[in-house]
Image (tube, rainbow, N blue to C red):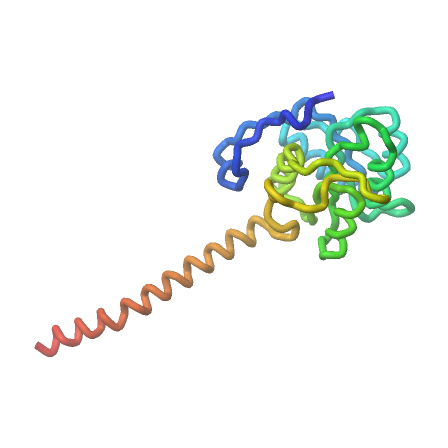
Length: 217
């Protein structure tokens, strides 16, 4: 089994550090994808291949995943939230409470069609490390994988809960799960345009007055 936590990642991970050629190695990571939608599972698998990681195990149901997890050690679990019969939340909850070492402590990323606060809360309370929304861009998935690989929170057991500490302190996760990189770019562009318009508006009266005075003289 690869030491998933040994993945090298630059400090202060952000879009610019990734685009600048940050070095990380996912080649030896054993990844499991659980998704009842074959098309979606294939997209996730192809995205992982682009990072140098191969999904060694692809399961179309929670029941299939449970059997595989009993017999194979994995480094990362990517699971769809909404599946028939047993959903992703119940699968993660089962895994966390299974007592299987080391699989019970594996980093878990959940994927959903949308991530309202109710789903974020369910993912947190079942023991997942993170939840992300579709459509899933390669950059977003890579950010989340690298973050959970270095998730600083300890694993806790409190009552019927087993999973990472639900309180974020140092090493906060990447930007909000529903936020898209395009949204951030558009917001930055809008702010820049607003600043430019304001600067032009402030400069225009002074320029006009000077021009008028020059022509009058």
